Length: 325
Ligand code: MEV
Image (tube, rainbow, N blue to C red; front, side, top):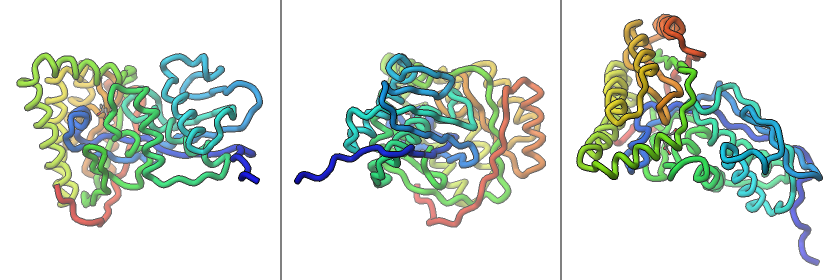
């Protein structure tokens, strides 16, 4: 007798979280390193319930049949398909529900986090286990629909237990020795399409590689500086790298006046550094503050200049292996 085909017999659950790219967004797509922080307090959870009808999606502001979700939910549709293929559940429909503590299309990794949570939930519904590499590969498949040639950084950071350095598909946990560091995150309220930002930069790069190539290299070098700053607990060095990265991302056409206003306000209130994070052209900025009280002042300044929402993330120190760059 052949073994019984796997079946989804119960609701499955999956969990991921938001991420903030500290340094290296965009340049990571061109093979340079990036550093990202998993934001464990900002969760994305998914519940999938086996159903007889067509798959239904209640996620990221949409409530309707999955197949009618359009291009914005193509990443989720691909995540479901990839997870079903992986676990042998082809043909099984699900009601999919996600809940998140953070907004979507704001550079905090919502599409990778949703895809990753749904994939985990589908596997959970049939008791299928997977290694971290397999989960990342499945999430990356989904992300390829959402972004133009994603680096894989978002998929990795939205499920990482600790800050990571990521380059060309390789990730490793980073030591973090900045004591008392806080990252203030502010939502500009402007939707940023990572797909459009990445595609636009690619077109500009292809038109002027001699001008843009060195700027991307500079972002990669700043990431190496940031890795060193985290390793040695040097908050002013990290802040300076963040400021410089924001300027360079602006030169690459990825900032907006609203993001410059927010980063200026954060610096004016004492942040050691501030920059856009993620795809840019909207979304969020992050600012580094040297303690809880400075972080509260930075947050107030960001609220005062019109941030839609703000969060404070306390950087926990970790004594993992020393960071070689
Ligand atoms: C988006 O969160 C990060 C980008 O570098 C794109 C990518 O890494 O695929 C802009």
